[in-house]
Image (cartoon, rainbow, N blue to C red; front, side, top):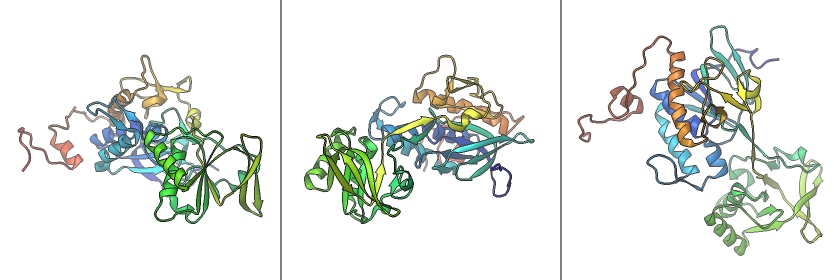
Length: 361
């Protein structure tokens, strides 16, 4: 049975943006300036895409007019910028189905059953939908989604529990620190587990981790998971192989698995769009794909001279928005306006600006 068989509860909108990374978020802004309403869907539980997931606290130096900011700060600034347009973000879900309708619009369905009826689709999926790298240990599968979480929403689920954080990257270190420093919802014990005593995080995070290790708030265990112990349907401990050849049992109530993320193109590859090496071919005048009404921006597209830079993606957002406007408002003449002087744009942005060079009263 198709997700489209039931046509009730459809969300009708002008545009659906697939991807809540920098390109997807700035696309919402550019669409909004042209009075195109947008909803955003992303497989990750938070907005920000690669900068937030892969280098949240590392510096970015090539954003115009901003000497330096982190991946997390970039995402926060973009989210602030799109606030006037009231875009709804549908996070933690993937667009799984897309079907053109007789009237030219598209029906979309997500992995969580959210469904849209939209005039245009803007694919800003980066190198694909990021999925957490799975924990490949036989016997642990029944506990995934319960005691074992890949992308927990917050720390409250771990109150009063013995928590193992498994991983070595920035997200793993951050989770261990957050749980250990929580003034409320504090777990009984936080253990950071990895096969080597080497962690990839910012110097500040590593310094905090070392201080918490020294105080006993975090225990770092070096070893590999080789088995598990359970009592009925409850996971009670992990069996570890240690570097010296010995074994150890590590009791736990919950585990956060943070082994990194892998991009996966996913259902986009099945939508019949013209592709080259797992990327979508586009017309650089509008960044339209081979399917009218579907546009692609950012790392997911390809064209002669393509450069995978944030500044390039932002340029693509502007042109794709004008391409989308021609679909949403067919036959309408689109005039280029500037946010500096356009009273229409000021109204959309909710700002008051004097146009004579003086500050508003």
